[in-house]
Image (cartoon, rainbow, N blue to C red; front, side, top):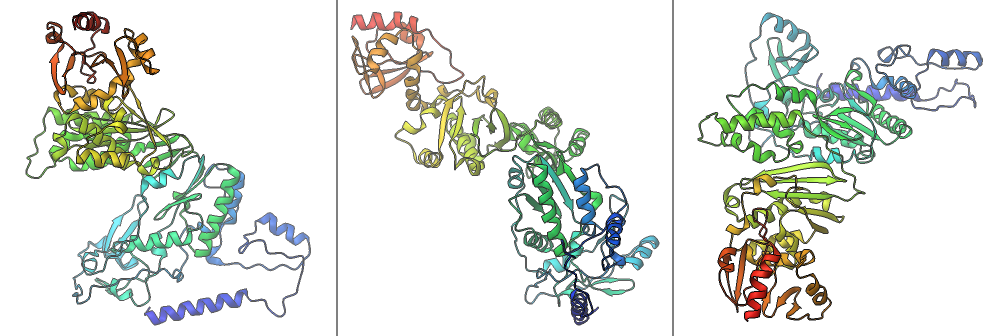
Length: 626
């Protein structure tokens, strides 16, 4: 059909529909007859009841829409939903109805780059069986589907190369999953040949022309393979379901997920969505739909009221993956589920080394360990809780020598994992810088969760506890701290043994090897005073502003004469006026230096010395001598 013929056909159909809907002058008026729905499919019992009333009734039978209403529901679903499906049986036909889809105002158009040369390619060669199928369906390339049928495919690379590309926003998978929080009932609707339910823009059909052995053909509906086809499809779905998206519907191309908190709500939601599909003349594929379930597979994940899980079919493929000769395919599939694996980047680092340009593929012990570790962790992946924005988020983050790791929690249950491999300049950061950088990257990743409500940061790094009181920051630290301070956070210390994120990796990197940590380390003594049994009497008096003997408080620190009192460490900062140096405990204990009472804790790699021993060896002897 030519574009003019198509337009005339549409006008004729619209005129005919208007005539059918218009009341006839000879039609008797009956006030007792009420229309409850735009389209009413009557069951056999309904028809019998209507006949018993002896009232005039009118029936419209459409042969192409005739369905059997006596068949059992396709799935084991509640009776109320079964009745609803019978009422909307026209939305789920066994095949697409004959004829062209309606013009909805959103049709697929192809805008060519000005001056581009139009492609002219010979048809593909086919075997006799394919030729018969092409004769029947006028195809260029046949690709078998999972159910044994054929999919229409045409090589569109030539026309795509000269098409102006349009970027319509595609929803993020993470955002769609977040919307499901609190829902307990799900229905997934899959459209039947969704692309073919959209018309080509009038006048653009010729741009889809392709050659076969039987002549030149054009597409009247949107085919697969066109560069802007996904954008057109997403535009239409958002337009049709706009009133419901974000309330109880998420839509990703031809997958429509309806979620509700109660069965009563779910029935209402199904009804309005079915009405919208019926009005837009969009048809679902009953065989691929799932109704009223508490466990639904959606875009590679399994969604339940408790949270999200990995899709077992995908995990089976990972578990059975043989030792690879190329690694990109495995990393692609495993990376899709990285949110389920703690420290994914650090674990996969040896595998990523093989993907670097110019690096030969050499499978060694480190790659084998990483490969098997990822397979094991994905096979036993945890359940991730869906975020509840009425509850407090908790954050744990840490850094190792090669990567960053973090977990987002609510009520002690993981919501998501984050990991990132360090590279370039970040690999050379000092330990404190890596810890601070890990916090910054974590906040950047989950800022949409954390910006609008107070949350808790758990850290086993003492220096991060006093981030708000640090002074003399360099430019990089100042920028990071400014970003961190834009969040309403509370930071709490967590022992390394309790921190589940990358602590084992970070333990081998001690702050003692980084001289720039001594300034930040001084801040930790304020929290240690409460645990100091030897000086508790002195501290109790001094904290209330009253000097006690030789002890007094200044700027939150306890001083003995002119020396600041610290607690528990193996290494000591010794102050001599404005000069400070680092000495070992053995060196300090064997000398008779005066006013050199300073020591502090430097993290998980440091040993703990007895305050009583320090008191006996230094305070009494040296202060008395002084």
